[in-house]
Amino acid sequence: MSYWGWNILVKGDHTLAEHPAITEYAGIVEAEYVMGEWRELRMDGLDSGGSGDIAAIVRATGAPAMAFYVLGDDCAIGEAAAPSGPIWYAVFRYDDDYAKGLPPGYRREDTVANALAWATQAGLTADPAKVEHAFAEGWMDDLYAAFGLPESTPADT
Image (cartoon, rainbow, N blue to C red; front, side):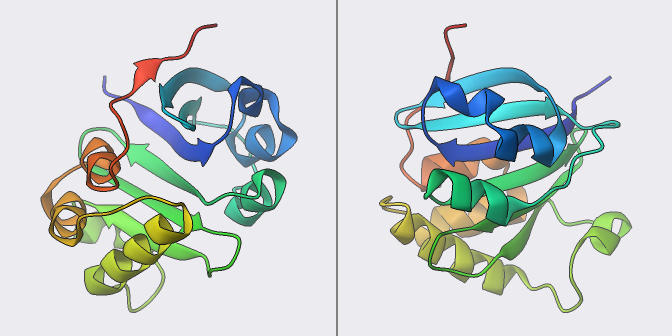
């Protein structure tokens, strides 16, 4: 069985895994990965009962954040926000079966533009072609690479 659950990318240290804004989003952090100043938190999403408020994470950390719900190996749907920008939505490997999780009028071109603006606000240098590829045919690790984030390593626990 492949992974189903939330992946949250947020800037911060080891204390993030227990921060109320994180745990209220999707429950318990099951795995944590470090990418420089950034953390990817993987959370059980099968029945988390979380609030799913990306804006609360941004307010709590003062930094941009994104969260994607991974649906096995097929698709991931999520949202992102920055302190001075709007909440925006994205999907990896778009499939009509998962379209109900997106706002009406979703367009990948808008997502790419929003992701590039998000990266700038995050202090990252993004490659536009690689960001487009990540959403069209890639996965979250492709997006992280397009943002110039270092490869992830498991956090010391």
